[in-house]
Length: 160
Image 1: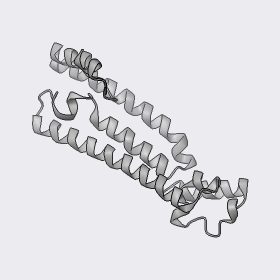
Image 2 (image 1 turned 30 degrees about the vertical axis):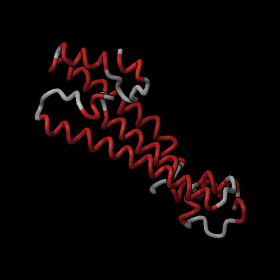
Image 3 (image 1 turned 180 degrees about the horizontal axis):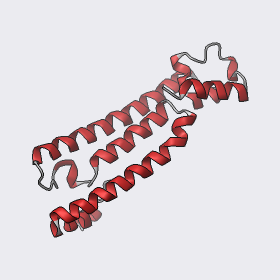
Image 4 (image 1 turned 90 degrees about the vertical axis):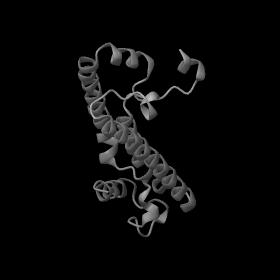
């Protein structure tokens, strides 16, 4: 929400009050794209709900990954959510931030999102190098078999 007032002030100063919005700080008007383009309230609520569902999915993926890592006590984890992706915490974080962009897009988050994603990508790659040093060929085989962030949904690709 930190960028919301700034974004509202900038957009209202550029575009005026689109669609005769009486109160730009009303919750339903928080979806800036819908508000600027004059979407109906039900559509703005639907888009916000969709963003919330994406955030919930990201949180679920992150929590499952964290649980498995903490239960492994330093051993390599390749089952559960790790059987489909190597970095569920970062994939979950990516989904959470995408959900936020859908639900409450602001100028600040639109500018910062690609920078944040790049930083977490680099962090994930550094962690992979550390895992390769720690687990050796076992991690190398896992890395060849399992994608980093986006699971394969095709059965033929997963079977290879």
